[in-house]
Length: 224
Image (cartoon, rainbow, N blue to C red; front, side, top):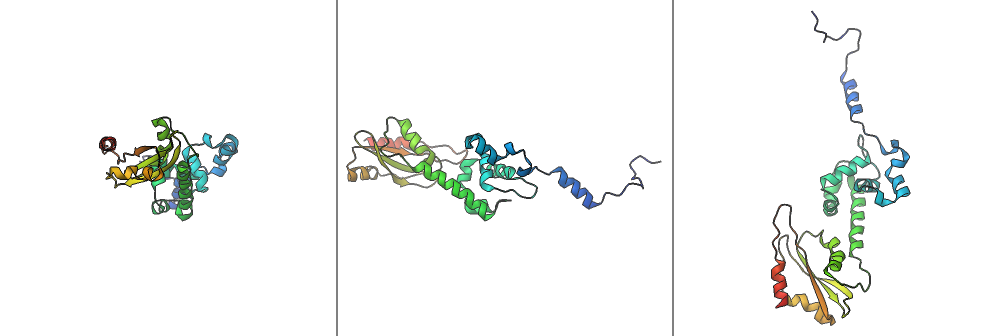
């Protein structure tokens, strides 16, 4: 007796090539060119502005093209996931980016160039910026110092009206510490005759590692 599972002699056998085509069809992703025009990242940016796009869509515009079976938005999403978001992507090296699937050297260069422009924009300060509170200093330096991979101490030189003259690097430590000499903190201020300074210190730490409040000891030494 037949259990109903036998192949009918009138049906063509499922050759491996046919099965492969069915599998490929099941994982096919819609290419950006096949999307409705108003849903494509470039068109949405043109019509609604860059702020309306997700991070993945903005990265996709930089990458321009995807790979066989993977559209450029999915490539961008995967890259962001691999490096744990924009902050991790901004720290990625050329080698790390160029070896990712569907990337290559040209796309790695495009992403690194965009990230560097963003970093340089954060470093630009308006002339004669006035510091009225700690929040002003935070807004001025957080974007740049949050991306640092080691502890640093910087000094903001001020005029008598609390206008920012410049920001100087005083010390750069390793991934866990920075050795600070009090005299070095005040050196540039004395040389340039600045009446006021603000010392800014970041606390770098790897994921799941405790942050040690070394800044407590630094502040104590500076105020003695």
